[in-house]
Amino acid sequence: MPDTIPAASPAVLPDAEMTTATQRAGIAAQRQGGSGVRQLLRDYVTLTKPRIISLLLVTTVTPMFIALRGWPSLAVVLWTMLGGYLMAGGANAINMFIDRDIDAHMPRTRLRPIPSGRMSPGHVLGFGVVLGAAAFAVFALFVNLLSAMLALAGLLYYVFIYTRWLKRTSPQNIVIGGAAGAFPPLVGWAAATGEVTLTAAYLFLIVFFWTPPHFWALALVKQKDYGRVGVPMAPNVWGERETMRQMLFYTLIMIPVTLAPVTYGGLGAVYGVSAAVLGLWFLRDVRRVMKAENFTQPAWTLYRNSLLYLALLFAAMAVDGVVPVARVGNDPIILRGPDIAATAR
Image: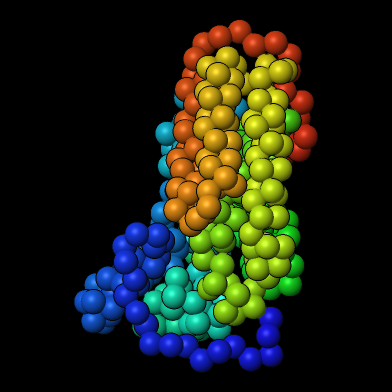
């Protein structure tokens, strides 16, 4: 980080294209005056980043179908979704509290509740902590303790490893710190079974290796923002071309990892075919970024498509999980919690 951060310029309303959901929420708040109870409720929702959480919930609930090879209890699914939303929302709110100093100087984030002046830092921090505590209670009381511990571990990893440490110190921030976003599959698996198996670990790795090309696509588009505040994102440190090569590298690892559970019967042919086709689609988008003379639009397309890619990949897992086909081999248990009776609740 530089010793001083440049003074913020007046907020400018950007075009709708290439804006994030949180940014669009800030634009709407500015246009509507940004006050009143209704706006306060909107800001609470904005702090949780619901668009991001919707994908996290997909990667949380889908493993429940795979783990049980069928339909999980509706009650467990609903409690898991509630706990997952609260925990991820709490992590996102605390992230906005920590990043409030740099958020004020980036067009993508300067309209968030704190830098825009609509909420105080203490208010946002308290909101995040309350959500995290409530989420742990929901998991521990209505699901099982292992899922509660894994969900809390995801929040702590995101807040302290990524946001507080790596984000401002290393271009590897999104590689190592991005593991926080890979916890939901473990949480969902533990919620359904009370244990974590090899297939659950592969789901963790899929999200882990997906995160760098996904986020670096956004970093290529928004690199001026990160450079303005001294955050060492890959394009600002390694350069654009090296970042693209790293995106290709992680994509070429991710694709075989997505197929690995099929080799021992953890997932079946329905998923395997889908994963292969989706992987080629993802790879095509990465190659388009690398070949483009002006990479901005292809990188934005990759960023948006990568979200759809992960959602479709996990949807294929869910379908595969309920298709009654014979599988070979057992799924080795890696971690077993103290309560494995979640599905009976």
